[in-house]
Amino acid sequence: MLVILTRTILIFLLLLLGLRLMGKRQIGELQPFEFVITLAVAELACTPMQDNSIPLVYGLIPVLTVFVLHYFMTLLSTKSVRFRKVLNGKPMIVVDRDGINSENLKKLNMNVNDLLESIRNAGYFSVEQVAYAIVETNGNVSVLEREGAPVPQSVPVGLIVEGRHIDCNFSVCGRKKEEIDAYLNRKGLNVKDIVLLTTEGKKLFVQPKEGAFFVEEVGA
Image (cartoon, rainbow, N blue to C red; front, side, top):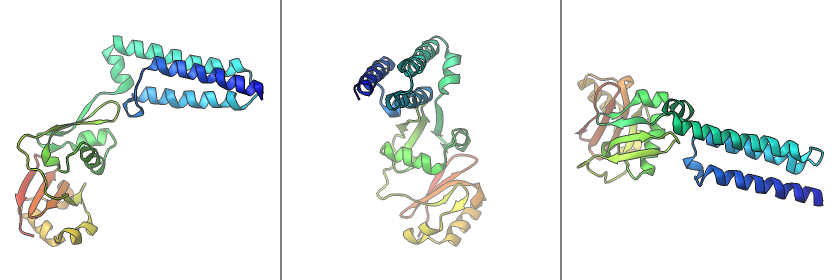
C-alpha cells in the first residue's frame, strides 16, 4: 500500500509540474495538439499508478517524453508561422458581409446548426446581427456585431436548413411549406439552393448558397 501511495504522489507531482509548464489554459482554449497531449498524459499516468508490477521509471519516462515534446513543438511554433499553421490550423471566417460561408463550414466539418448554436452562445440569435464570425484555431467562435442590425423580438424559427425543409417547425410558426416554396420560386430559387431560411413574425431571412442573404417581410 505504501509503495502505491508513493508512486501515485510522485506521478501526480510530475503531472502537476508538467501541466504548469504548459501554461494556464482552460480546456476550451487548448490548441488541438495540446488537447491530444493532455489526453495522452492522463492515459500514460494512470497505468503505473494502478499497476504495481510496472517499474516506476517506465511510467515516468513516457510522461516526461510527452512534456518535452510539447515544449519543443511550442518553441518551434513560435519561431515558424508555417509550422504553426500545420500544427494548429488557421482561423476561418464562417460568416461575412454576405452571410454564411458554407464552403468554409464544410472545410471545418461544421453544419449550419453548429454555427447557429455558436453565435447564440455569443449572444446573437440571428445571422443578420453578425457582420463576421471566425472559428479560431482552438474551436471557439469570435463574433463581430453588424452595426444597425435589428435585434429579434423572438427566436427565429428555421424552416429550411441546408436544402431541407424542417417540417416540424412550420406548424410552430404558422407558415405553410407551399407558401415558402412559392416565395422561393418567385425569387428564382428552390429549396436545394438555400443554406438557411428562418422566420420571425412576418420577416423571412434567406441565405442562398450563392450570393448574399436577404430579408423581407412576407405575410404569414
